[in-house]
Length: 434
Image 1: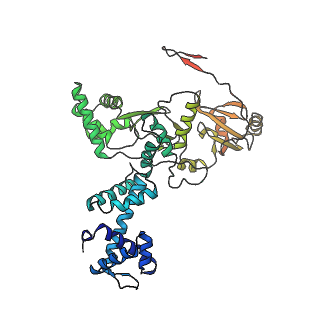
Image 2 (image 1 turned 180 degrees about the vertical axis):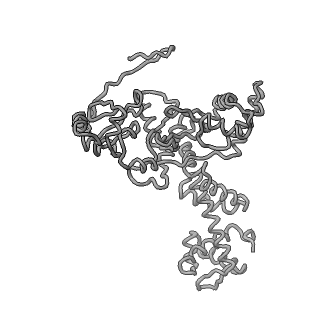
Image 3 (image 1 turned 60 degrees about the horizontal axis):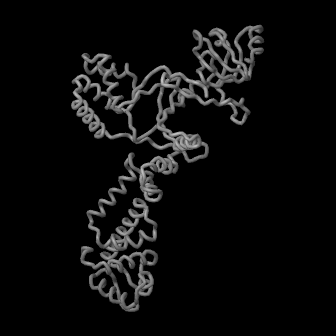
């Protein structure tokens, strides 16, 4: 039997019987009347109708049971109701009571194709990395806080602040959002749009430049100009380094690529204005990790707001060591092998007694904590901080001091207060203290 053979009223009765039969596998007329808030005479008429269609087993004054056909149809009606209610509450943000009332109305008029489309959309929110339930909270903010463009940033902060990334729920760990990846179809659209813009401007891409663009769009990895050039040369020996550099400048100009400056090298990455992220850079092996932490974004906005400062854009690059490098650096090594920014502890000094005493007087005794300020300073010398004293060691002396990695200094210790200056920059780029 197709459910369309039932009127909307009979569907309500059958759904109510199905729900009441979940616990005891039967229902009574009085329970149905109370559930639907109708009279017993109306219930009797509906039960006779359902029994005539072989959907229930019914006799006056006896318990009501569903037939196999009635159970399947009641189950389908119940699922349809819950699906519509879930769509209203979780997608549109309608409160539960109002969603329940409207779900009862909509379930009788929506076609099967519309219900399937709603189900597909909810599946899209759950599975697509560029959507997600947090994405829908922006719609709730839009409805509650006002339909204004200037509230977009507050909406982003409000929604992303509630993201709980997998594995980051414990205290003290960053709350990070998995960075969405742009589909290849969109990459092709961006590339085609760029070709159209350059064609209209009278500077179309040459066939060799188009090959470089295609190579750049194939991966999201961070690559230097030399890396891209070498890969392009393997495909086509006619591609020159100057042509690769010129093509990358075009991509950066049109916000398709972005030049990322990390220490003494420049790397190129895809530019996704709608998906901001920051970088963790390993100074030991050069690994780059992208991350997003809504708390950082919120603190930046709060500090800018307190200073009456309009924040336009920012770049955050954090330098340190990745997990693999930390594991390798856990062994005892010489001070000359340490990297700038590391905090280490002296284990021993491999030298004669006189040199050992001299270094101990400088603050390099066993157990001393040192902070490496620079590892390639003045022709390979090491600059470090021992307590409040700055030291400069030559390479030979640095190799005699054996150290192990140590944690950062206790943040609760008092620090020297620094004066804050306000600077103004004129059109010539000169900086003046205010």
